[in-house]
Amino acid sequence: MALSGRFPYNKRAVLSDGGRTGRPRKEVIAPRAFAYRINTPSEHGGKKDIHLLSGHDYGKPLASVRSGTLDIQDSEEAVTFTATITEEMQQVSYVKDLIAALKADLAVGISPGFRLPPRRAVLIPEKVEDEGSDPENGEHNAIIRTVLQALLYEFSVVTRPAYPETQIEARNWQLDEPKTGLVGADLHRPLNRWRA
Image (cartoon, rainbow, N blue to C red; front, side):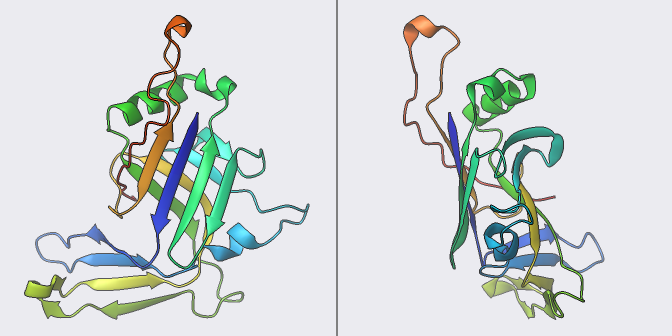
């Protein structure tokens, strides 16, 4: 079974509506902001390890670059990935739960797990600015954080994506009863995403 995901750059996410008295907070990930860990070799050769997780839980791994089950590509438009969910992993209870959630359209997107690099490495990793106030154009005096460079450690399949433009899809669903064969081969379920 394979999972394919897409996290588009340069889209705006609402992280907080500001409550009753505060200002809304929004976030934008700039093009190629995640490029460093995707493209830089590790100390041991090969790419730096990045994981695909269920719900940002390192106790629930699905695939990883180091294990050879996660292939990540970076472009100006988006980060895309393909994860191979091995037969052994498909037998694990939390993976079965995730597959059921994907089938039911309850796990609906992807969320990046990242941190900003230290200032000694990147002087300006982010910028913060005022959105302005023009409700007719979707501006509500929000504080907008644009992430210019970040250290990507994982993507997670989540139920409520902050960036609704993200996508996750699964192919080659396999039934429990082997005599009936495969169901939904090449089934594509484009889904959305939220980030905590």
